[in-house]
Length: 216
Image 1 (cartoon, rainbow, N blue to C red):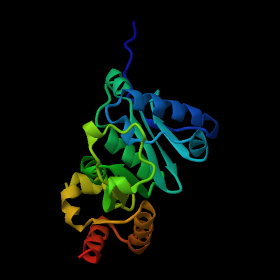
Image 2 (image 1 turned 90 degrees about the vertical axis):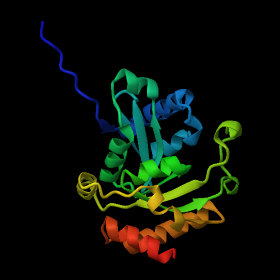
Image 3 (image 1 turned 180 degrees about the vertical axis):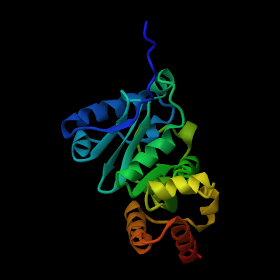
Image 4 (image 1 turned 90 degrees about the horizontal axis):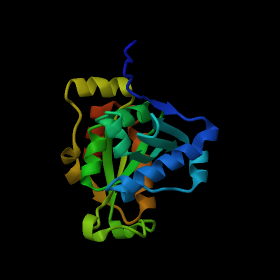
C-alpha cells in the first residue's frame, strides 16, 4: 500500500462567493476559543466586501478590509487535529503579503504577538471609551483591557523574514512607554493613518525610531 504523505495546509484566498465559509469559520472558532470574544463576528456583508483567507478547513483565518486585517481567528480543536502550531506568525505574514497595513487588538499580550510578527503598536484606547465592545464580555475573567492600534512595521515579507532571521524584531515592551491614550477610536485611527503616511517609505527600524521620537 502506498504511504500517504502529510501535507501541511496553507492559507488560501477565498473566492468572492465563498464569504459565508469565512463567516462560519469565525463563528465556530469563537464558540470554542477561550478568548473568542476578543474577535468580533461582523455582519456577513463585511466579509462579502473583503478579502477573506482560511487555513485548511477553517483551522484559522483572517480578512482584509480597506487595508486593515480583521476577524483574526483560530479554531483550537481543528488546529490540534491537523497538528498545526504557531499559526499567528504565518497568518500575519500572509496578511502582509496581501496588503494588510493595520490591525487592532485587546490587551498587551496580543499586541506583543502582533509586534513579534512585524507590526508596531502606536496608540491605545481605554476599554470603556469603545462603543462596540461585546455585550457578552466576561469582565470577571478578562477585566477591561486597553484596545491597541497597530500599523505595519515592515515594508514587505522579505524584510520581515530577514529581520526574524537576525532576531531584530522588537516586542511590545520596546514601545510600551511611547504609546499614548486617545479619547476615541476615531482619533486613534486618524493618528495611525497620518503616522503611516509619514513612515511608509522607511524600513522597519526607521519606522520604529520615528514613532518613538515623535512621542517623546
